[in-house]
Length: 334
Image 1 (cartoon, one colour):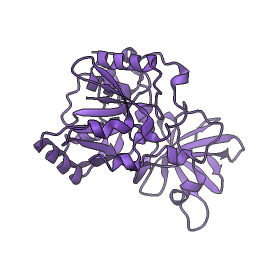
Image 2 (spheres, helix red, strand yellow):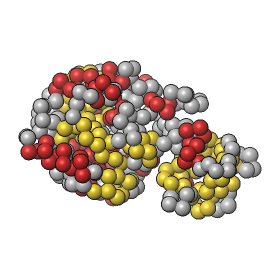
Image 3 (tube, helix red, strand yellow):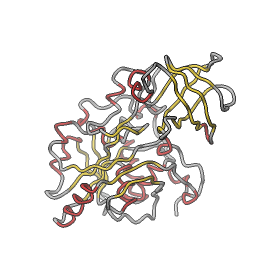
Image 4 (tube, one colour):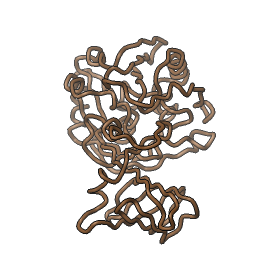
């Protein structure tokens, strides 16, 4: 069994991508074979030509909310909120950052919107109630109030107008994520039209990218995230299997949704944490970005590729100047 320390590696800071490739499908694609040590280098736009005739890509169609709010406490101090999920009663669960102790009753101002902390939960999570212009809801006005919730390693003094479109896949349609399913960022409309695609939904939460904190991997847990594997996707997988094709997951979030249900239709919340030793039942191949050290995402990649193969691939990528993390290049594990 491997430990949390086995997920560490040294990455030169200059390899952390600060903007997406332009065009998106010009990103580099490292191809890693699961049986053997072969590594091949392509451009992402070459992907359709290398798929088998009966293969199926399964991607995550979640849409990233402009969920980052910047404002101030009623007392004047700076405040920042990351809205995670809307509750049935209209309140929101969010991550709140400001100076001082978080407490119920704390009031904050985000432009023309006022938020009140109704409940304080663990690790900076709060339940927030919003009030604003008559006849409007914060959900309807997020595009004008919020920013793209870019990870901290994408350095911005202030939000850029293009962030909201750059940090969104071309097939995003179901709002609910606070982080992009980044392997999907490499697709363009033209490339998407050339490949067989089916979709799952997993609304990516902040816990997906959080570092694992416990040394023994089996002692770590993930925050539950909402997901759905629709019947049409389950049927497409069955047809792919019947024809001898392979199921190619686009991103680790697609893997977790598919492996949660075993490829059958289903919806709910998943806490599935995949680490080396996991037995994959659905996914045959994986397209994924290069992930942060110590993350559950890297643990999943090592589970799928094999620990030493994954390490060799990451070392190769670093040596050859690949771009890392959300806006970085991709790897195809076959």
